[in-house]
Length: 376
Image 1 (spheres, rainbow, N blue to C red):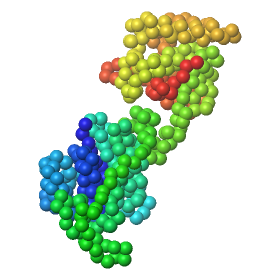
Image 2 (tube, helix red, strand yellow; image 1 turned 120 degrees about the horizontal axis):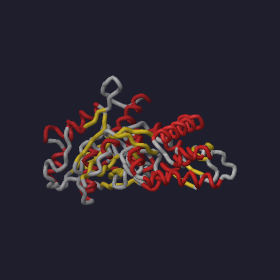
Image 3 (cartoon, rainbow, N blue to C red; image 1 turned 180 degrees about the vertical axis):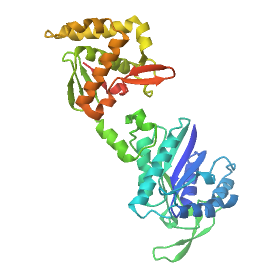
Image 4 (tube, one colour; image 1 turned 90 degrees about the vertical axis):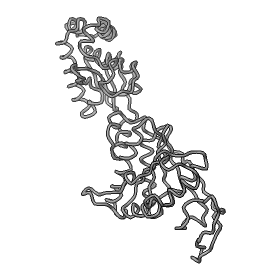
């Protein structure tokens, strides 16, 4: 599996080579490096790390016999923060600047984790504290089981040394500062670098496919999680009702039978596909019409509901639901969705029987994730 490192950097570009060294010492070499930084940070990366093939990044590769090109780190992978007008940021000093940072972290995290053939290492050691926090936040929303959040620790004596980028193979003296700011020469072999894997809880598997289709801001994703906690639809067949978002909706038996049919299809399918993509839980009318057992299932659900209700007065509807045709199907679906909208407002869209065009056919189904559906 390809390994990609996404790092935040500020005014200390050496954090990147220190991180690569720490990974290398653990027997891991990333395949590609991406950096989020300011215009000032970008200039420092070019001056100290790349320098037209002569920078410390390339010296590290050569010194540890890592073939040039083995780790892809090119200027296009340096992502400079830009405001809404396209102006590069040279620092992060205002709330507006921080919003740009959050947006950039979320977009890159979304993009890189969208490729299932690669794992992403989120390196949070560089830049201002807010940069580390924002990248870690993005990892928590979009991170997958193979992704990691890493921090790098270095011996305090070498931590703020501008001339130290990684422990060289051949030890040498390095000019450092003591606690009083006095220059002290130390042996590079005294420097220790530790790679720290930071535990994190990913909420990616709780996000809907709609949330994952495009990068979104943390507030939107958080609101989605809170809104759906617990994200459960309960279909109570004996009481002819559903419960969703803490609200109860009483449904006519015919509408409940049709709704339960699609809900059970979705639950038993258990797929994670986007709405309309799965032919098992999203059916066309032609599917239903051609397979008599499907219409019989709908009729059986209706009969089961009606038989439990000794006060049923819906006998006149038997012909429509018991011998379902497209006209009756369309009527029940329309009335059901209208009822849900009246009772649940905007939340109705999460559980309504949707109509989605796929190619030349129109399919019908419920978009709610299977694990959120209960039928009693």
